[in-house]
Amino acid sequence: MNILILGSGGREHAFAWKLAQSPLCDNLFVAPGNAGTTQIATNIPISYNDFLAVANTVRDKKIDLLIVGPEEPLVKGIVDFLRQQPDLADLRIVGPDAEGAQLEGSKDFSKQFMLRHGIPTAASKSFTAETLQEGLAYLESHSLPIVLKADGLAAGKGVIIAESVVEAQTTLSDMLDGQKFGVAGSKVVVEQFLRGIELSVFVLTDGENYKILPEAKDYKRIGEADTGPNTGGMGAVSPVVFANQTFLKKVEDKVVKPTLLGLQQENIRYQGFIFVGLMKVNGEPFVIEYNARMGDPETEVVLPRIQNDFVQLMTATADGELDKLSVQVSPQTAVTTVLVSGGYPGDYQTGKTITELERLEDVTAFHAGTLAKNGQVVTNGGRVLAITAQANSLENAVRKSQEAARMVQFDGKQYRKDIGLDLLRYAD
Image (tube, rainbow, N blue to C red):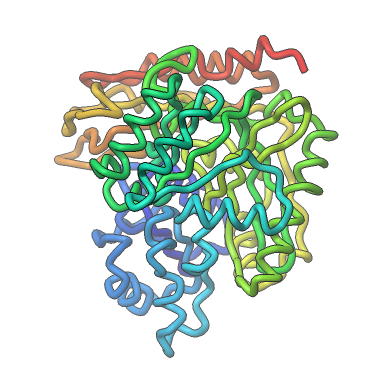
């Protein structure tokens, strides 16, 4: 089978790493890929937002299975575009169409969807530039802190938690009037702050059947003890110690089943991943957000724990045959520590030579922002590497991941040294 993955991050390297292990995988391509994917697949130097180039690659390489990694092409309608090509009617695709991708593409859409289908979530109200004054007045009596979310895609950075009314009003004005997040912030969802502990649950669906994949907890803030600005993710852990079977059953009954039923009732044919961002509040699950794809860096701890042939799992998703498979999960704990460029999530430099990768043992270094150049691996993004370790205990997985993170070197390297430590202290 010839397989094409769209994307260039750690998530896509993890997909490639997992797919390459299958005897069903004949030829593996990643577009555009990174320095890690080039070691196990053939990189195709095209943009995943260039739909025509993607379609031509599918034709040229005789692709049987396409997996769309990032959210942007999904929201922009790459699945719809490919489905409209008469000669690509038999192409298997893992990823929702543009309508399904609205679960992530519009915070307002997903909020209204949750309300329509009785899915537990925080109370909220949406505002645009036309209703800015109404929004500013609304914030006057809002409980603190106040969550403000850009409606559209903002690369994981469109959420602001304001600690005062003045900060919230300034932020709302900056987003709607000052276009802080561009088009993504042309509508803003103002949301109740939920006090609890956060985790993510991942669902794979073929449109009718579903499988719940291993859950994970990621670490969004740049600084230790969850301080500083939000990033795309500084690390992740799976399984999550506070997500016991009782809680996960509540997630399935109160969130997963109503979500999939809602999609079917609204005639949205959804084949792919649904990332459910959750808050556990007094033992109950509340949905913070949906994503229309796997998370990053959560993929780097979820996929290593899945013991199935991943090509088989992806094919069953695209063919509507997930009911024929059961997901086998390793009992081991996986921890990933993300190494980022100096200055991230603000301005940062690229082109820094990465060394000591060859010294790593008993861990997997998933490449994110890397580039192969003149025989060397250099930095090519804010998040550079995700170092994943597996062990029979959380303590050992944390230790192994952190030791490897210390070993790898590049100029300006930053990483959090507390990934997973909060879970060691957590008492359910």
